[in-house]
Length: 183
Image (cartoon, rainbow, N blue to C red; front, side, top):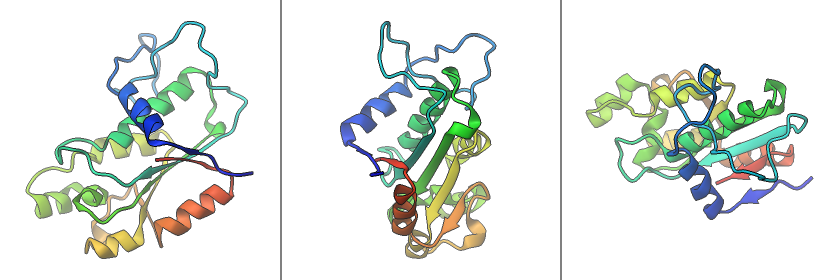
C-alpha cells in the first residue's frame, strides 16, 4: 500500500480549521480540550468513518511566523483529532504520529519549558498543546539529528516527546507501514 501525501494547500485548509470556533455539543468530551472541531458542512461527503483505521503522520518542519505562537501544525492535529472523536472514530483506529524535524529555532519547541526559557528568555508556547496531544493518544517524536544540530541535550527534551535516531528513518518506516503523510 502506497502512503499518501497531501499537499501544502490541504495543510493550509486543515490549519485554517483550527481557528474556527468549536461546534462540539456543550458538555461533550473533546479529545483535545479547548481546541476546535471541523465545522459541519451540510450534505458533506467523505466524513470520518469509525470503521477506518486512520494511520497518519504529521510532518512538523516549519516554524510559526511568530516565535511566541503555537506551531500551527499542532493546532491542525488537535482539530483533526477532535473531528475524528466527534464522528465516533474509536481510539484503536486513531494512529496519529507527529514527527518534529528541522534545524531552525522552531525545533526548540521540543525542549522542556525550563530549558526553552533559559535559551530564549520566554516560555515555550507549545508545552500545553504537546501535552494535550500526548494525552489524546498522539505519538510525538523528534529527529535525533535535529537535536544534535540544535545542540540540545537529551535531558532537556520534553518528556512527552520520544527521541528517534533520524526523522527520515521514522517517516520512511511509518509510510512503509501504511501511514499517510501530512506536511
